[in-house]
Amino acid sequence: MSRALSRTVFGVMLVFFALFFVLPIWGTLRMAFVDADGRFTLEFVLEVFRNVLYREGLVNSFVIAAWTTLGCLLAALPLAVVYVRFDYPGKALLNSLVLTPLILPPFVGALGVQAMLGQAGALNSLLMDAGLMSREQPVDWLGDGQMAGVIIMNVLHLYPIVYLNAAAALANLDPALEEAASNLGCPPWRRFWRITLPLTMPGIFAGSAIAFIWAFTELGVPLVFDFDRVTSVQIFNAIKDLSNNPFPYALVVVLLFFSTLFYGLSKLAFERSIATGGGRATTGRETVRPSAPRAFLCTAAFAALTGLALIPHLGVILLSFAQDWYATVLPDTLTLTHYREALGHELTLGSIANSLKYASLATLLDVVLGIGVAYVVVRTTLPGRQLLDAMAMLPLAVPGLVMAFGYLALSREGQPLHALMLGEDPLLLLVVAYAMRRLPYVVRSAAAGFQQVNPILEEAAQNLGASPERALWRITLPLVTPNLIAGALLAFSFAMLEVSDSMILAQQAAHFPITKAIYTLASSLGDGPALAAALGVWSMVFLTITMLGAGAVLGKRLGALFRT
Image (tube, rainbow, N blue to C red; front, side):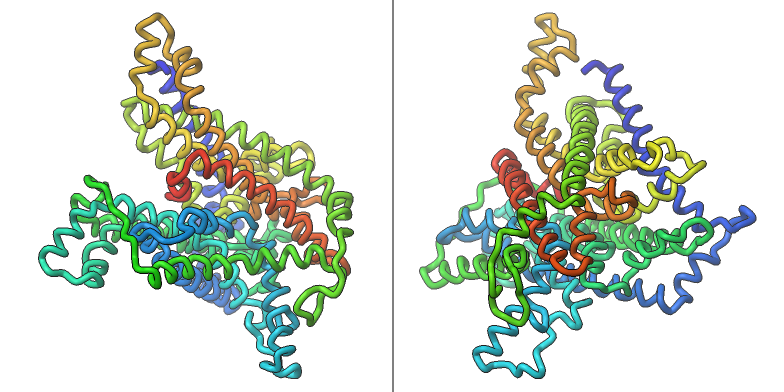
């Protein structure tokens, strides 16, 4: 790619980022800080902290995020240490199964958790049948199906992201540092707390930050659990009255402020704590083969956590086959009717077609932009290329709910992004929103591919008379195609199952993506939850195939896609 074209790519990305990332955030900020007379005011934001309901929503969001992050760390960190340090039976298979929670959208999994752990769920029914629980006073495992249920579902869904980052950080740690401490008489546990953990903290934080922000701004799971005392649901419920109501914008600003503050302060603190020489291993790490009992414990730990993580999946699958399932361990009658109806329902057929259309166009846009950004960052010495890389990664750090609300606000009549609305059809708006949210996956995948391809190959082609563009098209791109396919698969699959943008930007049933159709069915009476579960199983199968394909190409580098 010539220098002129590289500059053009840089310029295009700056414009794209300004229009579809900065502008929506700025539009929300402006509405939150400007009164009816056009004057600057802090009144709306301050009212968020004065209002009892808004304040309770913020506190609950923090509690959910904090407990979710702690739960993810407690689940993921020990497994990451075991995986990197020890050799045990079934290691490769169990490591692959750790990714299982990512194949089920969390708000769909919430249906399964309710079916399994609700007061009339499978677990309580099993304990009652065994005489271990009173039928008159069943245990409420989910805390009225609300906050505890939200935290459980978030932990079971998000711990793989923390695990991927922690395992990568531990694998990259130079074992010579630990060996030096051991030679000086430092015992194993002290070595872990004083040497290993501080040096791997940036990687652990990368996953923890995503888990915290995701849980802090999660919309789908609280909606399914009917828990409206969180900020994200309060924002969602306020969509009906945007015209003269500044408080939804103020809520979004507060949500963005706390998310950014947590991320910025933690990143600054952890980056300052990194010791020199701990970033990359200079010698290979040898895994330890433990004794048979300890090896069994390692295998059992992975299997137990995977089993817990499969509870939502099992619940969704059973619910999708259930003719009637209430207060019994298993459904009384199994049927395939829900699967046929799920693919034949007027709402689901249209939503599947819509999601395929939105996600395909968004992925195509991401591939074009991702190739350009990754090439400029990896292959050129253009000033500002690191800024370009940071810009491409920022959508991972900004809550999707904030971005979706900004798009909604700026797509109304007379607003800058109204041109993206084709009448009442949000096609272009959803394509751009999906593309912005999933661009980091394609950029990271493409960058990994460019780093693996020796630039001498391009230089040789240019020495033989090929232009830089032709050398890129004929030499480099074919070699990085597997990485592009992996990134595109992840971008496409996660766009298909995007929640925040879909729930907020698609207002009419004719334009519903698949996630909003699932939520609508889950909220309806009769067979609605079972139809939603069946549609969720189809989504699980689809996402499983794409995750396996991406994992086969990227291998251990898959965790890099979930780092900010």
